[in-house]
Image (tube, rainbow, N blue to C red; front, side):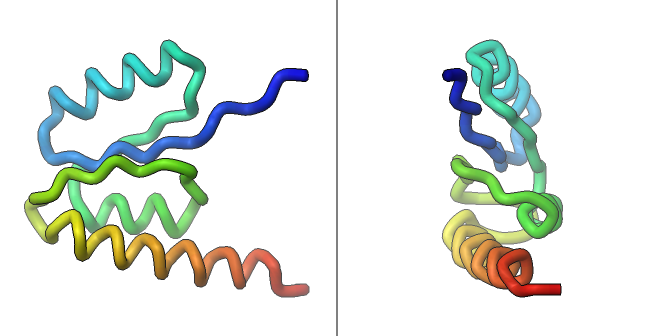
Length: 86
């Protein structure tokens, strides 16, 4: 049985780091997306649940710690909305 690989959201303002990590992880079969800013990462996290999100500690519009807190809350809210009957 072929188990799907986790979805990964790479969050870093350095384009080179995003590209290298994306290439490596994609070649290993992971589903990878990337974001340059906290705003972009938050929008992606609202649209999709990611299993792993390595976050740069210093982003142009926020800190990695603040972003982690926001994404965790976004995921809780999104999961509650998806679990609620329509």
